[in-house]
Length: 336
Image (cartoon, rainbow, N blue to C red):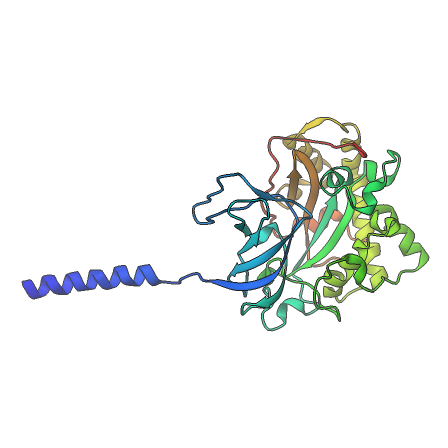
C-alpha cells in the first residue's frame, strides 16, 4: 500500500512538473523599431495586463524594440517608452509594424524568406485615414501643413495603403523587392516612377505625394512589391480607385455632415453597412486616437483586380480584428 501511494504521489509530481514546463514562451533579445499603427496599451506585464499609469503607444510613433515573443511569428514586442516608469513595456504585435535589425532568431517574423516573397498574398487590407484627425497626432508632417477646408483630404478619407497580407506572416509580410528593410525617413527610399495620369490620381487621395513626405515610396517598397499582379502604376491606380469607391459610396458624405461633431460608432458602422453590404461589418476595423476616428481598415479577398467592386471584395475576405473606438468618436475638422 505504501509503495502504491508513493507511486501515485510520484505520478502526480510528474504531471505537475510537465504542465509547469509545457510549451514555455521565451522572449528573444532583439533590436529594431516598432511603428505603431494605432493607439494600444503598453503593459508592464502583458500576462496580467498591468498598466499602472495607463500608458499607450500612439499611432504613427516609433519605439525601440528590445524583446520579442515568438520571433518566427511575433505576438508581443517589448519596447521602450521614454516617459514611462518603468520604460520597458509590452505591446501587441497587432498594433503596428516591426523592423528587426539585430538579435533574435526569426528575422522579425520572416521565416525562410516566405514573408518577403512576392505573390503569396491570401488577402489584402485597404487602409484609409481621416487626415484631419491624423494630423492632430502628427502635426509636424508636411501634409499636415495643409489647412484648406476645400481640399480632398479635408472631406474624404485619404489613402494610407493597400497591403497584401499573408496569414502565416501576421503583420510581417513586406519588403519583397530589392529594398529589404524600413528606412528611417520615407524620402530615403527611391522615388516612385508614375506617369502623369497616375501621379495626378494618386496625389488627390494621398496628400504626401504633393506635400513631399514620401509616404507613397514607403507604401510601394514595403507593401506594393509583395503583389505580383500589377506594375507600380497599376498598383497605385487600383489603390486610388478603391479609396474613391469607399468615399463615393456615401461614407464621405456621412462624415462631411458631421465635421466637428461627436458621432456614435454604431451609426457610422450602420451607414457603411447600408452602402457596402452586410459583410463589411465583420471586415472593418476602426482606429481611434484621442477620441477621434483616425483610420479605417478593410479586409479584401485575394482575387483583387482592377475594376473590382469594393463590396464584392469584402464578401469572402477574412474577418477583421477588433476596433478600439468607444461608443462615440469625434469627426475632426482640418486645421483645428
